[in-house]
Length: 95
Image: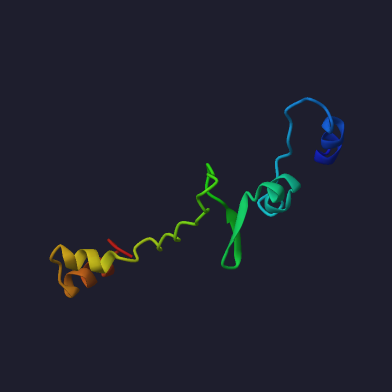
């Protein structure tokens, strides 16, 4: 049976059943819309924080930086020179 057929079979029953939604469907599902489960973040819609408290707004954590974004800064901080870092990069040890 399709998801829609199962949804119709269980609609109005006392069974604990819910559809498995795709990432694009979940924010538009009536239950999630009613509960405000997803929030807008820039141009994206993302899950809000859980649990939710009546006096606490949902916030979105900042995006993680790309892997290796701070490699040079860290290596300089532990005493490597620019030429040491270049050698590591040439050898393929770091990206």
